[in-house]
Length: 419
Image (tube, rainbow, N blue to C red; front, side):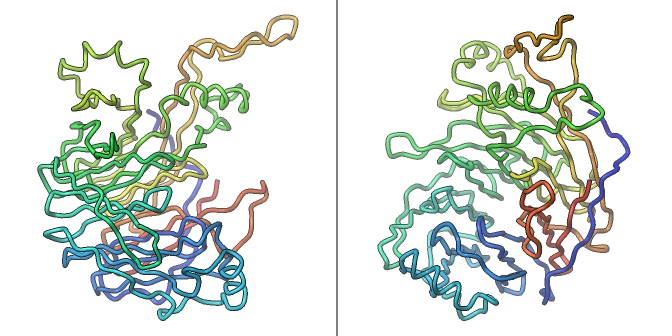
């Protein structure tokens, strides 16, 4: 793993105002709208809107909150709830200057956990909500979408032996990942109407504070000194082909001050490793029901001196951000590296030879930017990538992106990454 001197920079764009006067725990960007929600120790949820709201791709304008009182609250923006797509778009265009408190109304309270709720996560379809708590359980709720705000309990999983700290849905599949105080990461799927654990990782040596998924279209960077002669389009196509059966990877951070990446092994490759999966090799996540096998894909370069509380994997750029108790923001980038013969060679006559699609491509993770004391002396609790709302698209025609961090000082800061 390379740890070269960073050249790109992470720059503070602006804080979101007004801030909370107490510790702010987390920021949740809306998947399609330029709005973000934050939660704080002062028992408030604040919704910030940097600019005018644009009509969403669908009418999913629902917010879920988890609380120390063991309940989960569901909130809806009622100006568009229950309207047709045309009516909703009309109402948005009439008055979208700001999002005020009265527009978001409490809809229903989900009661089931026995102690404080640690994390909530919506499935890709928006129909399933996963919650986890200090009571060592994970609940999955289904939004019946009947107009009466009814939710049904789909499953309760209690395999964790400690507090469950975080839950996160796969970006396209109904696969749930969880992490907790028992130092494990567990993966869950539905089989014949029953939800169950399909894999468990025991590699971390401390509390798993946060997990996140890779974007479905992410590929490592090719425009770096480590791979100067690589044809970007060719090698990225080969990467996607080799990784197609594995799907998006999972990333985790822990009290052990490490950030690790995990990859699912394709089904046809499982038989070849079953004999070694029982030997105690820690890099393999051994499934309880022989459903899935996952392996450690990478350990990112060491950069934090204290516990890492959150990690965020950009689904647009592939950059990874980590934050934690040392008040530091670290940005990582995955890059292709050259190893042996190139994937596609050129003959003396100038003709391109066939690409060796069977040879695995190698990558490395490097630190590209570090910001110390990003929130002064305070610990940083969470980081999230979000679409930049105060500007249009960048020069390459892509939407720009910002990083949002929340900390113990109650502030929410917006950062921009520049190469």
